[in-house]
Image 1 (spheres, rainbow, N blue to C red):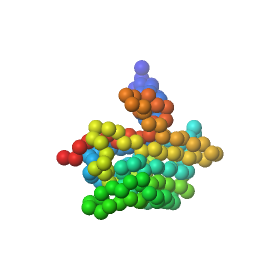
Image 2: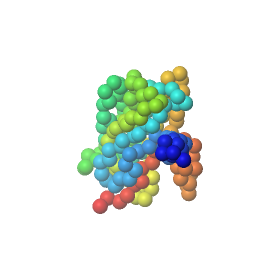
Image 3: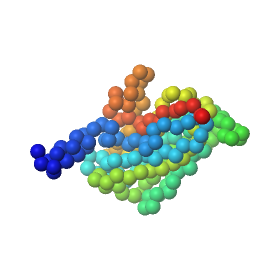
Image 4: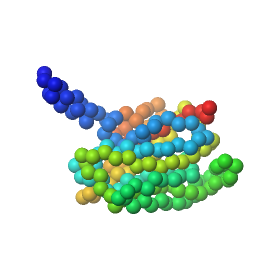
Length: 173
């Protein structure tokens, strides 16, 4: 097999891997009680169409969200109640950003990009569990990829078709 044929086969195998086909977090582990920078990696559009909107639902227990503006995209945040009051460095915090939306840009299907936000992982979260960050990717022509499935107890992201990006929570050191 020639060098080029081998590379073509290798890249085809990578392209069909479920682990590379969905939105993921660059850093997939973080300590409870710390600030976490979530870099959401978007590897493709929707069945050939360009991505034009990325929506992230902030999971319970992640507060004080600050998204990073992205050149060429409009940044919007949705604020609301957290459902409970969290301690944020001694300040009771019951509301804040619950959703982040980047829109108006264009990420071609053949390109890759990252969308970034940071937030605080509250002490109410449990170590050795996974915090899921649901993402909805909207594309030209009405295509939508919903990366929102959370595995059932005893299952993993590999057991779902459209897994939400997962963050393994570890104890604060």
